Image 1: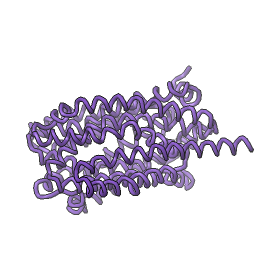
Image 2 (image 1 turned 120 degrees about the vertical axis):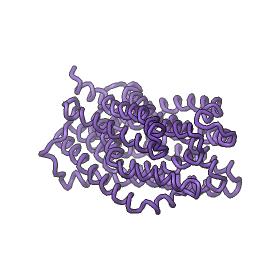
Image 3 (image 1 turned 180 degrees about the horizontal axis):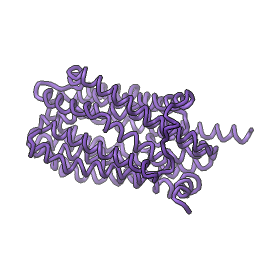
Image 4 (image 1 turned 90 degrees about the vertical axis):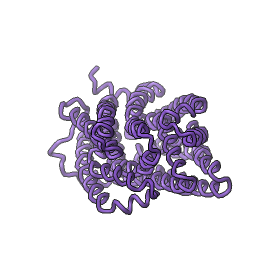
Length: 452
């Protein structure tokens, strides 16, 4: 069987649990490598024994989230349409959509760079930076904006590769980029004495390598689909479909980023070292986050392909298998975090206050893990089906109507200890609502098909 046929077989006929693991696990492995971008920056900056620079990296993180959000507008929208087009047997439309994704990515990154440099002081102030962290945050964020074409391009290219089932190709770019970042971080931070701006520069160059590797797979014709000059002008229909799914996906990430900023601004009231401690805990948590995100992203092309093929029973089977796999895996991760919290925080800081606070935060937010995987899988499934409104409603309710109000309420009632428990409570509620909504929608579509 040819390689391309194997990819289609995985999407269409592989046993549900095996298909979820087959597409999810390589992606998780790649994401574990990718998370080292932030962990490596945090580790090497921590070696300078300057907790304010650690705090600045955490304060700057929403900027990266916004870049990912804007990339996601193109990547998620194009990926959904590519998978559905493949499921419907329309490879020409899939390649046209792929080409449009790359063109739109270049345009978006140019806008982000210009806007970021122009409004840099206002952005840094809005992130919650204060006297001791403002200068460091500004240095880090400026480099991120200058190199946004590489960060956003790397993220989008990975999504487009995964849309056709080329998961191994997508993680190859992640691995290459992360290795580059690991090698360059100590050189730029210490040898060239660039400090925090050196960490940001290494991150940008790592993303540049990641993007080049992803593009090489297309140039070398090792992908199922390939962009073409004849598709350089996207049709109105393709643009409409990309933005129909992509814009809500972007709004979801922007809402998450806004909630993150609210969280940081509340934490600042407890001291800038608290911000540093929370930043370390959240970065360690990102290892657990990438597990559910990897399984959800791996499931997305399967759901999109089978929705395009109108194979609703398989969609239901894949969803059940995916939720079971991700929930069991995250329970094991949660147990490790609970046992090893002080040791893990201590890797990045030897300040007693940072270790104590970071351990408390990690042992609270780890309770999201058994629930958030199902929420993410449902949200990704709606995007794959070309029903972004439902995906956006999940995020809107989750961030705007539950998490932020609970964050403010718990902070007001119980102080810092209450604030860090707002997210686990939110995810427990959202898991029940999200699974019920997705099962209901798929059931209705299957019933309508049976009656037609």
